[in-house]
Image (cartoon, rainbow, N blue to C red):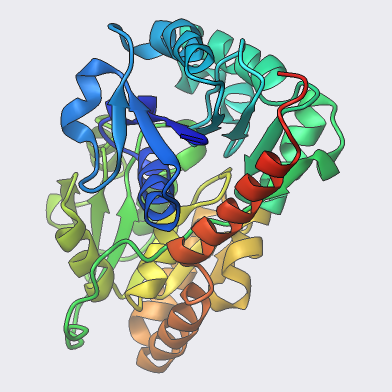
Length: 358
């Protein structure tokens, strides 16, 4: 075993960070014969099929990651450790770690105090210390991390993520008279989910436009929609869905709205693009970086601008078709195989640097 992967991410039940870590793990394990996933006991039943693994320690969570994992690694030759999910052991040197964004610093209210403390220590001493390697998923995120922690951006490697996890239906559903707008309704101020509700409230009730909210829904959204005077039938609160159901929703969507105030990368719009969904995205740096000219943009806090875009796209089949074509073309550049190949190059570089300084 030359390379180990920190498998604590398997204890998370949902979310983009877990999806990214899972994809990187599965693809690297297919490319390399010297890689092993290290997991806490409670995560054994979550190990992806075909991935070599070892059970480490007796606990889980921060204690496992910060104490049991590094002790086990030292007893087994101190292999290169990959940390694919935003946290790394502070007391281990021979590692490469992912940091998708600085959300805990920007929006501390979205995270527990314990997580924020662990995150600060992990980044400062487990990722940015001399001899360590940090990877992030976008140039926008690299600039923010470097500014937040006072480091040279050149020391942080950018590896874009893939977006080809979801199955592709045999055929895109035929158009209907009613436009279906799909959005995520996740908790957190940075997700800006209320912007889509605010926009819908500005669109006349008799317009043939409905909204579907997916994901781990913020329970405050439905009461908020009622306060805004939106008729119950205009919004479908679907919540968590399977990959097949998510692919179907993206394939049916007249548009996917991505109103985030901040993201480190943003998988959902790219996954939606791969299924042909037109994208309406907030005008923030990361969206411009990965969506380029394949989306229509609106100021993130301007509900009227978003309402105008939704109304325009709903009424114009040619505009929808053009955006759909742009979506599919853009998404082709983001594959997990490509991501894993760039990770593999970095692993080889790190292994060739030798093990001095651990």
